[in-house]
Image 1 (cartoon, rainbow, N blue to C red):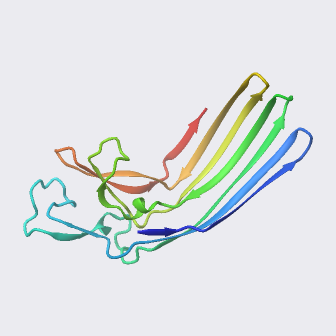
Image 2 (cartoon, rainbow, N blue to C red):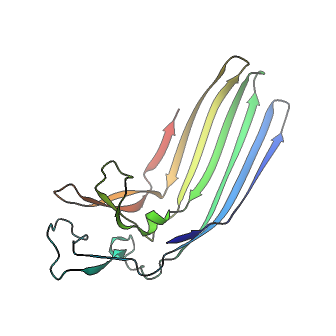
Image 3 (cartoon, helix red, strand yellow):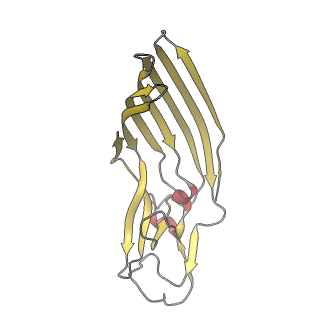
Length: 202
């Protein structure tokens, strides 16, 4: 598999008053991914139905991994194109010489990785158990995230400190969907999109 990702970004810094500063920036990307050859695996173990513990009758056979896709009918063209945009704005207000308050807003888009798009069952240690085989979905959507953040910074000659809080809303978050689980602990997970993702912290 392969990916090409040209991008262009800019950033501006503009004092509004003696105490208030505006920062902003943006980035645009165009990503093109592809895979050489058919997206199939071969073997004598039934990976579509891993509850079958024995060898498959007839020996080695090919499996089209498109059966796991969110759109199984769209498996002929595996090349994907993604146009990505991201940007941020920041307002900083200097309360006193040592203390600054700030508020940030950011938006970002992320394309699926090659593993998330095209994996055909490798065992990769991205999950807690190392016996999970990962299956990609060439029809995944790009992730989109909005994030807000507020905070205070204190910076003196002796003390440096800060506190902040943030909240993110993610559309089409890419996560794992359990597909099959065998009695021997082997599991199959398929990459999928969900709209049920938020991230928050202080």
